[in-house]
Amino acid sequence: VLIDGRTGERFDQDVTVGYIYMMKLSHLVDDKIHARSIGPYSLITQQPLGGKAQFGGQRFGEMEVWALEAYGAANILQEILTVKSDDVYGRAKLYECIVKGDNLPEPNVPESFNVLVRELMGLGLDIKIE
Image 1 (cartoon, rainbow, N blue to C red):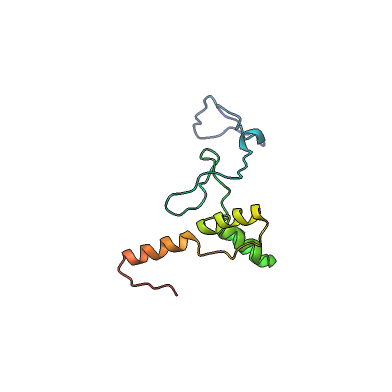
Image 2: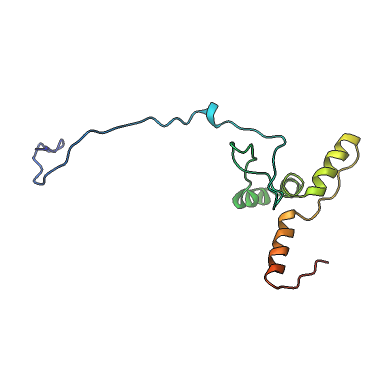
């Protein structure tokens, strides 16, 4: 018999009662913390891998892009989406310019755009980039 704690009345229906197992979630900072300076890149898109287990980078999603755009941080956004991501030639050239003390190069076309173009060509579209 189960009694309602608020009113003191008995419940009319049968109630199943059993053991309750509770476990603590272990979301601790020491387990979550992760940083990356250099690391592996995807062979297809040339973008940094994701996740701590693969020593990947932090994903910069669409909402984060729109937030930086709203703040007017176009130069930071361009850097994050090209040389810090999948602009292979620009990444190598950037390191070279930093070492030599030269001016930074203009970013190139991201590799993800080239992957998109090749996928569209695979569908039979004749695409020319000018």
